[in-house]
Amino acid sequence: MSRSRRWIGRWAILGCVACGDAERPRYVTEHLEVELYDGEVLCAGTLAIMDMQMERVAAFLGIDPPSQIPVFYGPSAVTEGCGGSWGGCARASGVFATSGSIFHELVHAVRQSQGDGGAVGTWLFEEGIAEMLSGYRWDPYSAWLHPSEIERGPEVLADFPRGEGKFIPGDYATAAHFVSWLRMVYGDGTLVAFLNDPRYLDGEAYDDAFVSHFGLSMEDADSAWRASAPEEYAWSESCDPSYALAWAGSVLEFTDTVDCEAPHTTGPRDGTYVTLRSHCFTLAQPGTVRVEFLANGGSLRLVPVDCVDTGEFAPESYDYKSLGGGDELELPFAACTWEVQVDSVASLTLDFTLRLTQL
Ligand SMILES: [Zn+2]
Image (cartoon, rainbow, N blue to C red; front, side):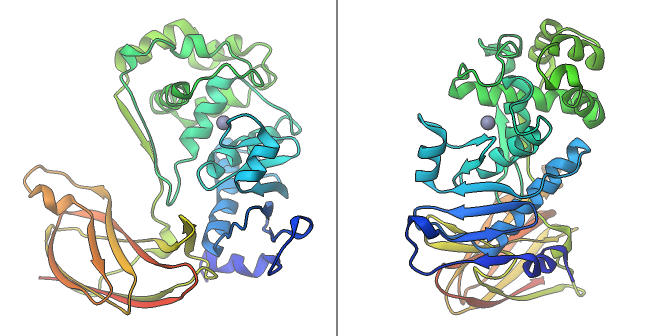
């Protein structure tokens, strides 16, 4: 049994059909207690991946994941819990988030468990890792900028302690980009050792901690980042290894159901669509592939995740492919890992078969 399928047994779903304020729908997962506001719905796959995010962030930090973090989910929960124009926040009382901010705020929640529920570290690094580690499954994240042109660079941002609202929107990408650079240059071990250093965590001597772990001052790190960082860092793990799809010779056949109550279906998106995601296949050789999407409705996207780009294949072979239910097309495919995404309408289940034939 796959990891995600196993989880559905752990959920106690304390739902109600027509809920007043006093009785909002609630879901209890291994690490979260999620309360839904504003008529929000969460498909089983989304809940599973929220729970996995807690384990993934904790594993990155080398700590035990916190248990039973309250999550207040929906726009009005964010307005009530965070105030101002925030898209979400993590407080000692729990996480306040929407679909757009939940993966970022869950990173803060894990970090705050290292500070007994209170804020830790400084804005630069905490927002940086929250952005970087928010890139997950169906929500890829990339930070793109020209380091040499940034006015408010890491050295300026490093002086903002947690809890002070001095960050402006553009600073988040700078923080994520700089932390990504540290991760790529110095490795996860060094970055995590710094993040977990008590001198950094309690925010009293983060400069000393930075020099100890990275061997240079913030000023020098700012200069090195400007001089050497690439423009873009992208972080995502679109494919779930336990959902890998295999070829049988030149044919790959995949039959499943898009169903908001099934553990691999995420959403709803825009209140309307639910999506089966995280199933991937790899095409070792480029070529033409017949794609048959056998379904009474719905839509299919095949999205390139990781490609061998030798530059010799037509650009369209790298494009994502889009089909409607019942379509059959012959299309050029580059040698990539491709993610299968199947959309259905939230209130319906959609049975489908995808058949790929290498021609
Ligand atoms: Zn944040």
